[in-house]
Length: 604
Image 1: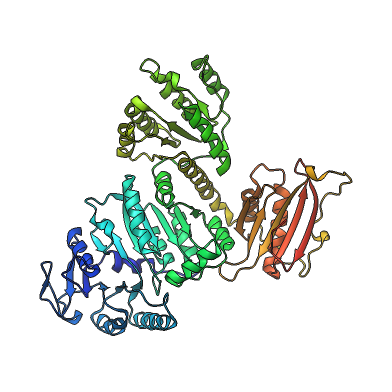
Image 2: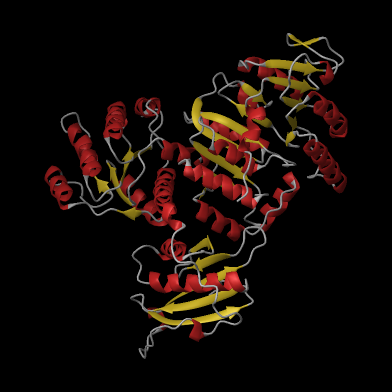
């Protein structure tokens, strides 16, 4: 197995000295903003502005050349034009600089000439032992030690909130937006890196670095492509080993999105279904919202890990209860059935109003000073119910907002399961919201965001529980016959029952070879949903994949598991695109399986 030097980013994130090449005294220009931010950050090391036109910039002695520096410059900030970088690298190699940041654009993303220049720069840096960040980057930020190597506007905030979340993005603009929006929600960060064109340092390097960084507890990724799949896989596995969730947003799903992305950072996009399979196997949580990039990891790392997937919802609003039910169904959340003890006590408390159905509507009738204790008590009933693994509280608390916040914080801290509130008010409920955020209790302002976080938290906990056994199991049989697959290769119980089409469910399972990620499977269910996974290498992985595709208790699971194993054998021996179409009866009994090779389309 290849070993990667994740610590090679230490010079970038923990430098002793910083050379600012092309520094400017004009704080309105990007080179001036960079050095101004460094001066504000409290960086404890040495700052060396380099510009032959000046003797001093912002109070720092300024040098004519990097060769004149009196001490080490572990990182050089190259705030100069692209055409001047090759020559500057010679000087940096001579003084032993370990990392350089190239902010300039106009290279691989711009033209063939730019591609050639970027390759020349990367080759020279590699030969001289220098790691490169960029080109076309906004830089890097280590909030913890004042290494602010960026002119990002977000660094102009009065306060940068400290937190255990670190972020890597190929887009500099996204880095600033992400940090600003996260802190607006009271969520702080530790480190952020914008990789740009990735002439050298890439997303995988940064994920690996964060995975072994003690200050980082969760990792957010905004990616346009994954350039080094083996390194990315190793980095994600290291993060999982250390219990650090990775939440990722990736562009390039649509054809138009792919074209835009390729023009931005010269990224190679790849097959999105293949990426889905890769992320699922690595436990990477893929999201579609920029806010989910910080809301979901913040929830996972600040709450107890769910022991199961059964969710109980409680609300003092019938409207929020109904909304919650719809969202849970849409995102695939398993709703808990309350225990008999919970059911009996709730019914006693709610005589004449409310319901004991999940979601539990306690109604506004209990939101009075005399009956307020019932609100807390019914939360506590769900928290101690053995049939409930996660509790979600939908709040529109009004005049009792602050007391609600106090109670939720106290109950969450005492509970051994997650208690997740979503808070629908703004100014009227500000006191309660402040109580929750001051206590670092994850809180969501939209119900759908809360339930997406619940689903992600439950799925990630299940992934961690199962991954330790995924490597065990009988290896896939590679003696499976090569060539065309026939019905004899996958016998089903014969049936003479005649059924109507209304009583038949058609699903497909497709094997698709992929040069970047490797062969993967796509399961298209009868309801139109699609799930993906890399091919399994042993029986245990095949079993886990079947559970991901159809669910743990689905009657189709055994048949799907067997078919997964057959397609894995084909991937190992022949690696031909293969599609299986399966027909199941209304009770999940297998009726027929047909196969085709040479076309991986999964349209039923």
